[in-house]
Amino acid sequence: MYNFRTDMADERKDLYAKANNIENEINGIKSEQEKISDKIKVTRVKVLNEEGEKSIGKKIGDYITIDINKINVLEDDEKEEASKVLANELKKLIEDQIQAKDEILIVGLGNEEVTPDALGPKTIKNIEITRHILKYLPQYIDENARPVSAIAPGVLGTTGIETVEVVQGVVEHTKPKLLIVIDALASRSIERISSSIQISNTGIVPGAGVGNTRKELTKESLGIPVIALGIPTVVELATLVSEGIDIFIDKLQQKAESNEYLNKLKNNDKYEEVKETLNVGEYNMIVTPKEIDDLIQNMSEIVAEGINLSM
Image (cartoon, rainbow, N blue to C red):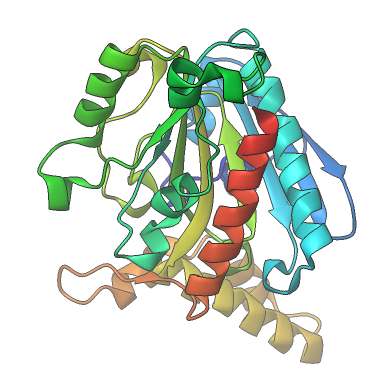
């Protein structure tokens, strides 16, 4: 299968289409875009069958990407708008799976001590938890409120326990009807770092985008529907350099409009060649921007508010 090195379904679709010179829709995949505002765009990719699944390496299901332009300079009202867009998309996926008052468990994956991997635990802190209030103090909450609980199970390297084992135990004892899993993702574009949100109804394989694949969190492994919500926080160095070469070629082409070699170089995927050149020994470099602290803080607030609104 093509080495996508990204968790984003729409990026995988575009990469596969480019690699196979496909101008229209890929067989087994349907996609559409909607511009919400000058700063927010929604892309919906639907994998329809096994052919589509095989093409982009994503399970049959829905993948919704919300792109938020210039997240680092958004005003409060623009952040609120982004949360509402997320809530609307998330609510549709939830309502397709469970009833209005069914319990939901929210899981924040990642390591809070490593900023690019801290999205899940940071988001969990801002989720409105209601399960215990409905159980012990029901008089203080709306009777139509949905029971919501949340955990941040940590990572294998610090707990010695696979995330899926922790989640299986919680699911077995608390018996939620649906799981929402929040995780950091990898992208093929530096512009999408902490500025895109992907939601899917197919679950998640933690670490897949950076080659550190863990056991999957899916309906098959947990017995209940799983909605995955992720945000790109890292880009592989080889991918970043490959993108930089394209920008360099663009600048050269502005000076020399016709150059067969540069056109061929740009049209080919240079990822594997760049990766081989950049890898030092057994190390594979992963890159994140220096402003990642602020970006993660912004996105965790937007995601938490979007989840709270969708409940």
